[in-house]
Length: 228
Image 1 (cartoon, rainbow, N blue to C red):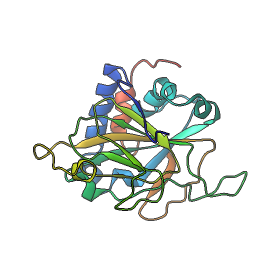
Image 2: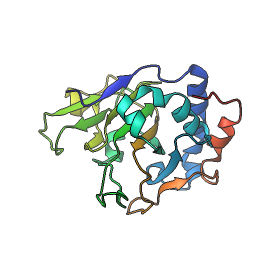
Image 3: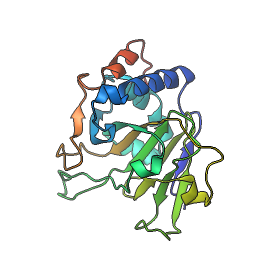
Image 4: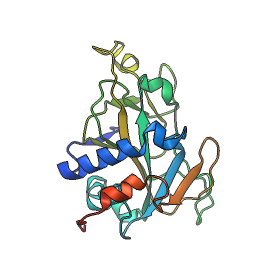
């Protein structure tokens, strides 16, 4: 069974260009003042008006590229921005998405139903690697995908994953040194609103977006919306 599902050309060109420009500006190191965009996540309740270009892309487009059972059960998404400079793999460790709070109905520490990534740039390195079990150097139950502009990938939210290198997956270096930024939007689909407890290194989890952080996303969303 495949670990990663792929949708090419997931967003209309205009939406993709708006999103890429806004994310590139919002995540510039001089704008973030040393903060990592991976340490700040936001919550968007599906069915409510989008507050920025990320949430508009979720409501109008990405929701159509997920399994029907996830679409039926999801009440909202947790989203955040990604920016990695080369060497990409050295800047990202193994990860596992969990609600540090708990499911209000079961009390369990749950993972999202589905995790996903929108790639905003082409990069010839820094593949997403998803593991079927515990990650280890010799783990064979894994899949990988390289960043490609306007590619949307999804994988089960409870699986370990990382950003690898071309050498990790092909046992060969890239054809030339890669200098491009790896820009992404990351979206977790949840059947309930996860808790907002931020355990280190996280600084803010499932917060309401009010434009105080990433105002560029709100500016990019100013314009006619397409309802789903």
